[in-house]
Length: 403
Ligand code: KG4
Ligand code: ZN
Image (cartoon, rainbow, N blue to C red; front, side):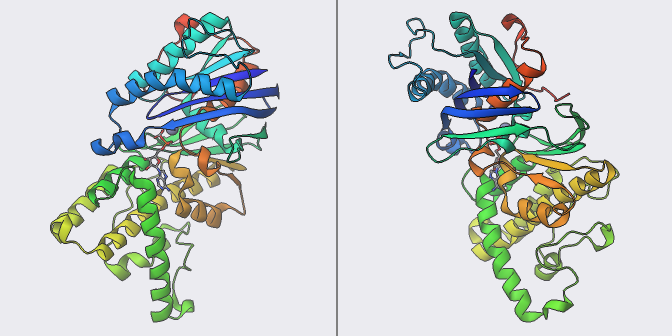
Protein backbone atom coordinates (compact mmCIF):
# COMPACT_ATOMS: atom_id res chain seq x y z
CA UNK A 1 0.00 0.00 0.00
CA UNK A 2 1.06 3.59 -0.52
CA UNK A 3 1.51 5.67 2.58
CA UNK A 4 1.84 9.44 2.67
CA UNK A 5 3.44 10.77 5.86
CA UNK A 6 3.62 14.28 7.27
CA UNK A 7 5.92 15.77 9.94
CA UNK A 8 5.62 19.31 11.35
CA UNK A 9 6.40 18.95 15.07
CA UNK A 10 9.17 21.55 15.20
CA UNK A 11 11.10 23.46 12.53
CA UNK A 12 11.28 20.85 9.75
CA UNK A 13 8.48 20.34 7.26
CA UNK A 14 8.56 16.78 5.96
CA UNK A 15 6.39 14.87 3.48
CA UNK A 16 7.25 11.35 2.30
CA UNK A 17 5.52 8.73 0.16
CA UNK A 18 6.46 5.07 0.53
CA UNK A 19 5.19 1.77 -0.77
CA UNK A 20 4.84 -0.50 2.27
CA UNK A 21 4.08 -4.20 2.62
CA UNK A 22 4.31 -6.93 5.23
CA UNK A 23 3.25 -7.09 8.86
CA UNK A 24 4.29 -5.24 11.98
CA UNK A 25 7.19 -7.58 12.75
CA UNK A 26 8.60 -7.72 9.24
CA UNK A 27 7.70 -4.92 6.86
CA UNK A 28 9.30 -3.70 3.65
CA UNK A 29 9.38 -0.10 2.52
CA UNK A 30 10.25 1.48 -0.79
CA UNK A 31 10.70 5.25 -0.88
CA UNK A 32 8.73 6.77 -3.76
CA UNK A 33 9.39 10.40 -2.81
CA UNK A 34 10.86 12.18 0.17
CA UNK A 35 10.86 15.92 0.83
CA UNK A 36 12.27 17.75 3.82
CA UNK A 37 12.47 21.48 4.24
CA UNK A 38 14.59 22.70 7.12
CA UNK A 39 13.80 26.14 8.50
CA UNK A 40 17.09 26.43 10.39
CA UNK A 41 18.32 29.47 8.45
CA UNK A 42 15.13 31.40 9.22
CA UNK A 43 15.45 30.74 12.95
CA UNK A 44 19.15 31.62 13.25
CA UNK A 45 18.47 35.33 14.02
CA UNK A 46 16.30 34.22 16.97
CA UNK A 47 18.98 31.87 18.35
CA UNK A 48 16.45 29.04 18.45
CA UNK A 49 13.10 27.96 17.04
CA UNK A 50 10.56 30.80 16.94
CA UNK A 51 7.23 28.89 17.10
CA UNK A 52 4.95 31.40 15.30
CA UNK A 53 7.39 31.62 12.40
CA UNK A 54 7.73 27.81 12.26
CA UNK A 55 3.94 27.46 12.11
CA UNK A 56 3.65 29.98 9.26
CA UNK A 57 6.37 28.20 7.32
CA UNK A 58 4.68 24.80 7.71
CA UNK A 59 1.42 26.28 6.46
CA UNK A 60 3.15 27.77 3.43
CA UNK A 61 5.32 24.76 2.63
CA UNK A 62 3.01 21.77 3.12
CA UNK A 63 1.06 22.22 -0.16
CA UNK A 64 4.30 22.87 -2.05
CA UNK A 65 5.96 19.74 -0.68
CA UNK A 66 2.83 17.68 -1.30
CA UNK A 67 2.78 18.68 -4.95
CA UNK A 68 6.49 17.93 -5.18
CA UNK A 69 6.26 14.41 -3.71
CA UNK A 70 3.18 13.44 -5.71
CA UNK A 71 4.99 14.43 -8.90
CA UNK A 72 8.21 12.73 -7.84
CA UNK A 73 6.37 9.53 -6.99
CA UNK A 74 4.63 9.73 -10.38
CA UNK A 75 1.29 9.51 -8.65
CA UNK A 76 -0.15 12.57 -10.32
CA UNK A 77 1.49 14.70 -12.95
CA UNK A 78 -1.17 17.34 -12.99
CA UNK A 79 -1.48 18.05 -9.29
CA UNK A 80 -2.01 21.58 -8.14
CA UNK A 81 -1.18 22.99 -4.75
CA UNK A 82 -4.80 24.00 -4.42
CA UNK A 83 -6.35 21.08 -2.57
CA UNK A 84 -9.83 21.92 -3.81
CA UNK A 85 -8.90 21.04 -7.39
CA UNK A 86 -6.47 18.22 -6.60
CA UNK A 87 -7.50 14.79 -7.85
CA UNK A 88 -7.25 11.82 -5.52
CA UNK A 89 -3.89 10.13 -6.04
CA UNK A 90 -3.50 6.37 -5.35
CA UNK A 91 -2.60 6.89 -1.68
CA UNK A 92 -3.98 4.28 0.76
CA UNK A 93 -3.03 5.68 4.14
CA UNK A 94 -1.97 9.04 5.61
CA UNK A 95 0.22 9.25 8.73
CA UNK A 96 0.73 12.48 10.64
CA UNK A 97 2.71 13.42 13.74
CA UNK A 98 0.37 14.51 16.55
CA UNK A 99 2.93 14.94 19.35
CA UNK A 100 5.14 15.64 21.16
CA UNK A 101 6.33 18.98 19.83
CA UNK A 102 5.21 22.58 19.43
CA UNK A 103 1.42 22.45 19.46
CA UNK A 104 0.87 25.24 16.96
CA UNK A 105 3.22 23.47 14.54
CA UNK A 106 1.68 20.04 15.12
CA UNK A 107 -1.76 21.48 14.34
CA UNK A 108 -0.58 22.65 10.91
CA UNK A 109 0.31 19.08 9.93
CA UNK A 110 -2.81 17.60 11.51
CA UNK A 111 -5.25 20.02 9.87
CA UNK A 112 -3.58 19.53 6.49
CA UNK A 113 -3.64 15.73 6.85
CA UNK A 114 -7.29 15.76 7.94
CA UNK A 115 -8.26 17.77 4.87
CA UNK A 116 -6.49 15.32 2.57
CA UNK A 117 -7.91 12.27 4.34
CA UNK A 118 -11.41 13.65 4.04
CA UNK A 119 -11.06 14.76 0.44
CA UNK A 120 -9.46 11.52 -0.73
CA UNK A 121 -11.45 9.33 1.66
CA UNK A 122 -8.38 7.52 3.01
CA UNK A 123 -7.65 6.45 6.61
CA UNK A 124 -5.57 8.81 8.76
CA UNK A 125 -3.29 7.47 11.50
CA UNK A 126 -1.82 9.73 14.21
CA UNK A 127 1.86 9.03 14.98
CA UNK A 128 3.98 9.63 18.06
CA UNK A 129 7.06 11.55 16.92
CA UNK A 130 9.27 9.65 19.40
CA UNK A 131 8.17 6.28 18.03
CA UNK A 132 9.19 7.72 14.66
CA UNK A 133 12.69 8.44 16.01
CA UNK A 134 12.92 4.85 17.32
CA UNK A 135 12.10 3.42 13.88
CA UNK A 136 14.36 5.91 12.10
CA UNK A 137 17.27 3.49 12.66
CA UNK A 138 15.83 1.20 9.96
CA UNK A 139 15.44 3.84 7.25
CA UNK A 140 17.79 3.79 4.29
CA UNK A 141 17.86 6.38 1.57
CA UNK A 142 20.39 7.46 -1.00
CA UNK A 143 21.32 11.00 -2.02
CA UNK A 144 18.51 11.01 -4.59
CA UNK A 145 16.04 10.25 -1.79
CA UNK A 146 15.34 6.74 -3.06
CA UNK A 147 15.87 3.37 -1.42
CA UNK A 148 14.28 0.25 0.01
CA UNK A 149 14.62 -1.21 3.47
CA UNK A 150 13.01 -3.65 5.85
CA UNK A 151 11.91 -3.16 9.42
CA UNK A 152 12.23 -6.39 11.36
CA UNK A 153 11.37 -7.05 14.96
CA UNK A 154 14.60 -6.76 16.98
CA UNK A 155 15.80 -9.07 19.74
CA UNK A 156 14.14 -8.06 23.00
CA UNK A 157 14.36 -6.75 25.64
CA UNK A 158 15.39 -3.72 23.64
CA UNK A 159 16.18 -0.21 24.77
CA UNK A 160 15.91 3.08 22.93
CA UNK A 161 18.01 6.11 23.76
CA UNK A 162 16.18 9.13 22.34
CA UNK A 163 18.24 12.29 22.26
CA UNK A 164 17.05 15.44 20.55
CA UNK A 165 16.48 19.15 21.05
CA UNK A 166 13.32 18.41 23.02
CA UNK A 167 13.93 15.00 24.57
CA UNK A 168 16.38 12.85 26.46
CA UNK A 169 14.76 9.53 27.22
CA UNK A 170 15.50 5.89 27.82
CA UNK A 171 12.63 3.75 26.60
CA UNK A 172 12.41 0.06 27.48
CA UNK A 173 10.82 -2.33 25.00
CA UNK A 174 10.25 -5.65 26.71
CA UNK A 175 8.34 -6.62 23.60
CA UNK A 176 8.39 -5.22 20.07
CA UNK A 177 6.34 -1.99 19.92
CA UNK A 178 5.61 -1.94 23.66
CA UNK A 179 7.14 1.05 25.38
CA UNK A 180 7.97 2.09 28.92
CA UNK A 181 9.91 5.26 29.67
CA UNK A 182 12.44 4.26 32.37
CA UNK A 183 14.35 7.52 32.49
CA UNK A 184 14.28 11.05 31.12
CA UNK A 185 15.67 14.49 31.66
CA UNK A 186 14.34 16.39 34.62
CA UNK A 187 15.00 19.74 32.96
CA UNK A 188 16.76 20.56 29.66
CA UNK A 189 17.14 18.05 26.84
CA UNK A 190 20.69 17.18 25.83
CA UNK A 191 20.32 18.76 22.37
CA UNK A 192 18.92 21.90 24.00
CA UNK A 193 22.03 22.05 26.25
CA UNK A 194 24.26 21.70 23.17
CA UNK A 195 22.34 24.56 21.52
CA UNK A 196 22.46 26.83 24.58
CA UNK A 197 26.17 26.23 25.20
CA UNK A 198 26.75 26.82 21.49
CA UNK A 199 25.07 30.19 21.81
CA UNK A 200 27.20 31.06 24.88
CA UNK A 201 30.33 30.22 22.89
CA UNK A 202 29.16 32.47 20.06
CA UNK A 203 28.47 29.57 17.68
CA UNK A 204 25.60 29.62 15.16
CA UNK A 205 22.32 27.78 15.83
CA UNK A 206 22.00 24.83 16.14
CA UNK A 207 24.98 24.48 18.46
CA UNK A 208 25.07 20.66 18.51
CA UNK A 209 26.87 20.01 15.23
CA UNK A 210 29.11 23.08 15.77
CA UNK A 211 30.25 22.02 19.24
CA UNK A 212 30.75 18.48 18.01
CA UNK A 213 33.04 19.68 15.19
CA UNK A 214 35.15 21.83 17.52
CA UNK A 215 35.29 19.08 20.15
CA UNK A 216 36.42 16.43 17.66
CA UNK A 217 39.31 18.62 16.46
CA UNK A 218 40.28 19.53 20.00
CA UNK A 219 40.06 15.88 21.10
CA UNK A 220 42.54 14.84 18.44
CA UNK A 221 44.90 17.68 19.38
CA UNK A 222 44.64 16.78 23.03
CA UNK A 223 45.20 13.10 22.41
CA UNK A 224 48.36 13.92 20.50
CA UNK A 225 49.52 16.26 23.27
CA UNK A 226 48.85 13.61 25.91
CA UNK A 227 50.63 10.91 23.95
CA UNK A 228 53.65 13.16 23.60
CA UNK A 229 53.82 14.14 27.25
CA UNK A 230 52.81 10.90 28.95
CA UNK A 231 53.81 7.40 27.84
CA UNK A 232 50.62 5.69 26.60
CA UNK A 233 50.74 2.86 29.18
CA UNK A 234 50.72 5.26 32.13
CA UNK A 235 47.31 6.69 31.19
CA UNK A 236 44.82 5.30 33.68
CA UNK A 237 42.00 5.23 31.11
CA UNK A 238 42.79 4.48 27.49
CA UNK A 239 41.90 7.30 25.14
CA UNK A 240 38.54 6.79 23.44
CA UNK A 241 37.21 4.66 26.27
CA UNK A 242 36.64 7.23 28.92
CA UNK A 243 34.00 5.05 30.49
CA UNK A 244 34.11 2.32 33.05
CA UNK A 245 31.29 0.92 35.10
CA UNK A 246 32.85 1.59 38.48
CA UNK A 247 31.98 5.25 39.21
CA UNK A 248 35.26 5.77 41.07
CA UNK A 249 37.20 5.09 37.88
CA UNK A 250 34.71 6.98 35.80
CA UNK A 251 36.70 10.06 35.01
CA UNK A 252 37.98 11.41 31.74
CA UNK A 253 41.74 11.87 31.99
CA UNK A 254 41.46 15.19 30.23
CA UNK A 255 39.36 17.14 32.76
CA UNK A 256 42.10 17.65 35.34
CA UNK A 257 44.73 17.89 32.69
CA UNK A 258 43.28 21.05 31.23
CA UNK A 259 41.54 22.33 34.37
CA UNK A 260 38.25 23.08 32.60
CA UNK A 261 36.41 20.37 34.50
CA UNK A 262 32.62 20.39 34.28
CA UNK A 263 30.16 18.35 36.37
CA UNK A 264 28.46 15.14 35.23
CA UNK A 265 25.01 15.79 36.73
CA UNK A 266 23.11 12.84 38.20
CA UNK A 267 25.77 10.39 37.04
CA UNK A 268 25.62 8.36 40.24
CA UNK A 269 21.92 8.60 41.07
CA UNK A 270 20.26 5.21 41.26
CA UNK A 271 17.81 5.87 38.46
CA UNK A 272 17.92 6.46 34.73
CA UNK A 273 17.13 10.16 34.76
CA UNK A 274 19.27 12.96 33.38
CA UNK A 275 19.75 16.65 34.09
CA UNK A 276 21.37 19.12 31.71
CA UNK A 277 20.44 22.52 33.07
CA UNK A 278 23.19 22.49 35.76
CA UNK A 279 25.83 21.54 33.22
CA UNK A 280 24.76 24.42 30.99
CA UNK A 281 24.90 26.82 33.97
CA UNK A 282 28.35 25.52 34.92
CA UNK A 283 29.57 26.48 31.43
CA UNK A 284 28.01 29.91 31.86
CA UNK A 285 29.81 30.49 35.19
CA UNK A 286 33.07 29.23 33.74
CA UNK A 287 32.78 31.66 30.82
CA UNK A 288 31.80 34.54 33.12
CA UNK A 289 34.93 33.94 35.21
CA UNK A 290 37.06 34.04 32.10
CA UNK A 291 35.78 37.51 31.14
CA UNK A 292 33.84 38.93 28.18
CA UNK A 293 33.30 36.31 25.45
CA UNK A 294 35.17 38.40 22.83
CA UNK A 295 38.30 38.31 24.98
CA UNK A 296 38.35 34.54 25.51
CA UNK A 297 40.90 32.90 23.20
CA UNK A 298 39.51 30.48 20.58
CA UNK A 299 41.72 27.77 22.00
CA UNK A 300 40.10 28.09 25.43
CA UNK A 301 36.60 28.05 23.89
CA UNK A 302 37.50 24.88 22.00
CA UNK A 303 38.66 23.21 25.20
CA UNK A 304 35.41 24.16 26.91
CA UNK A 305 33.44 22.78 23.94
CA UNK A 306 35.35 19.51 24.30
CA UNK A 307 34.83 19.24 28.05
CA UNK A 308 31.14 20.08 27.65
CA UNK A 309 30.69 17.38 25.02
CA UNK A 310 32.59 14.85 27.13
CA UNK A 311 30.40 15.63 30.15
CA UNK A 312 27.10 15.60 28.22
CA UNK A 313 27.87 12.34 26.42
CA UNK A 314 29.33 10.62 29.48
CA UNK A 315 26.00 10.99 31.29
CA UNK A 316 24.13 9.46 28.34
CA UNK A 317 26.51 6.55 27.92
CA UNK A 318 26.79 5.78 31.63
CA UNK A 319 23.04 5.64 32.25
CA UNK A 320 22.44 3.70 29.04
CA UNK A 321 25.09 1.17 30.07
CA UNK A 322 23.50 0.78 33.50
CA UNK A 323 20.07 0.22 31.92
CA UNK A 324 21.51 -2.31 29.47
CA UNK A 325 22.92 -4.29 32.43
CA UNK A 326 19.83 -4.06 34.61
CA UNK A 327 17.35 -5.11 31.92
CA UNK A 328 19.62 -7.55 30.11
CA UNK A 329 19.17 -5.57 26.90
CA UNK A 330 19.85 -7.29 23.57
CA UNK A 331 19.31 -4.38 21.17
CA UNK A 332 19.85 -0.66 21.56
CA UNK A 333 18.16 1.75 19.14
CA UNK A 334 19.49 5.30 19.29
CA UNK A 335 17.41 8.07 17.74
CA UNK A 336 16.97 11.85 17.56
CA UNK A 337 19.14 14.70 16.30
CA UNK A 338 21.94 14.09 18.82
CA UNK A 339 22.24 10.42 17.79
CA UNK A 340 24.56 11.42 14.93
CA UNK A 341 27.09 12.84 17.42
CA UNK A 342 30.40 11.14 16.63
CA UNK A 343 31.57 10.97 20.24
CA UNK A 344 28.29 9.42 21.40
CA UNK A 345 28.43 6.78 18.67
CA UNK A 346 32.08 5.97 19.40
CA UNK A 347 31.62 5.74 23.18
CA UNK A 348 28.43 3.65 23.04
CA UNK A 349 30.04 1.28 20.56
CA UNK A 350 33.24 1.11 22.62
CA UNK A 351 31.54 0.46 25.95
CA UNK A 352 28.61 -1.84 25.09
CA UNK A 353 28.99 -2.60 21.39
CA UNK A 354 30.26 -6.12 22.04
CA UNK A 355 27.37 -7.05 24.33
CA UNK A 356 24.50 -5.38 22.56
CA UNK A 357 23.48 -4.83 18.96
CA UNK A 358 23.42 -1.05 18.53
CA UNK A 359 21.44 0.59 15.74
CA UNK A 360 21.97 4.25 14.78
CA UNK A 361 20.00 6.08 12.09
CA UNK A 362 21.59 7.23 8.87
CA UNK A 363 22.92 10.74 9.51
CA UNK A 364 20.30 12.30 7.19
CA UNK A 365 17.53 10.51 9.06
CA UNK A 366 18.69 11.32 12.60
CA UNK A 367 16.85 14.66 12.67
CA UNK A 368 13.15 15.17 12.17
CA UNK A 369 11.73 13.79 8.92
CA UNK A 370 8.54 12.28 7.54
CA UNK A 371 10.10 8.96 6.51
CA UNK A 372 10.30 7.81 10.13
CA UNK A 373 6.68 8.92 10.63
CA UNK A 374 5.68 6.77 7.64
CA UNK A 375 7.36 3.71 9.17
CA UNK A 376 5.75 4.23 12.58
CA UNK A 377 2.37 4.98 10.98
CA UNK A 378 2.39 1.83 8.87
CA UNK A 379 3.53 -0.44 11.72
CA UNK A 380 0.90 1.00 14.07
CA UNK A 381 -1.74 0.56 11.34
CA UNK A 382 -0.79 -3.11 11.02
CA UNK A 383 -0.60 -3.55 14.80
CA UNK A 384 -4.10 -2.07 15.16
CA UNK A 385 -5.41 -4.45 12.48
CA UNK A 386 -5.98 -1.54 10.07
CA UNK A 387 -8.22 0.31 12.49
CA UNK A 388 -7.76 4.08 12.80
CA UNK A 389 -9.40 6.59 15.13
CA UNK A 390 -12.14 8.92 13.97
CA UNK A 391 -10.19 11.86 12.42
CA UNK A 392 -12.26 14.30 14.49
CA UNK A 393 -10.69 12.89 17.66
CA UNK A 394 -7.12 13.48 16.47
CA UNK A 395 -5.64 16.43 18.34
CA UNK A 396 -2.15 17.88 18.78
CA UNK A 397 -0.54 16.83 22.06
CA UNK A 398 2.63 18.81 22.74
CA UNK A 399 3.50 16.68 25.78
CA UNK A 400 2.60 13.28 24.37
CA UNK A 401 4.48 10.42 26.10
CA UNK A 402 5.23 7.01 24.64
CA UNK A 403 3.28 4.25 26.36
O1 KG4 B 1 15.59 15.42 16.46
P1 KG4 B 1 15.92 16.82 16.11
O2 KG4 B 1 16.25 17.13 14.67
O3 KG4 B 1 14.79 17.80 16.51
C1 KG4 B 1 14.07 17.68 17.70
O4 KG4 B 1 13.07 16.92 17.72
O5 KG4 B 1 14.52 18.33 18.67
O6 KG4 B 1 17.17 17.25 17.03
C2 KG4 B 1 17.77 18.50 16.94
C3 KG4 B 1 18.86 18.60 17.99
C4 KG4 B 1 19.44 20.00 18.13
O7 KG4 B 1 19.45 20.33 19.50
C5 KG4 B 1 20.84 19.86 17.58
O8 KG4 B 1 21.77 20.75 18.14
C6 KG4 B 1 21.17 18.44 17.94
O9 KG4 B 1 19.96 17.73 17.67
N1 KG4 B 1 22.28 17.89 17.14
C7 KG4 B 1 23.46 17.51 17.67
C8 KG4 B 1 24.27 17.08 16.59
N2 KG4 B 1 23.54 17.21 15.43
C9 KG4 B 1 22.32 17.71 15.80
N3 KG4 B 1 23.91 17.50 18.94
C10 KG4 B 1 25.17 17.06 19.15
N4 KG4 B 1 25.99 16.62 18.17
C11 KG4 B 1 25.59 16.62 16.88
N5 KG4 B 1 26.42 16.20 15.94
ZN1 ZN C 1 12.60 14.99 16.84
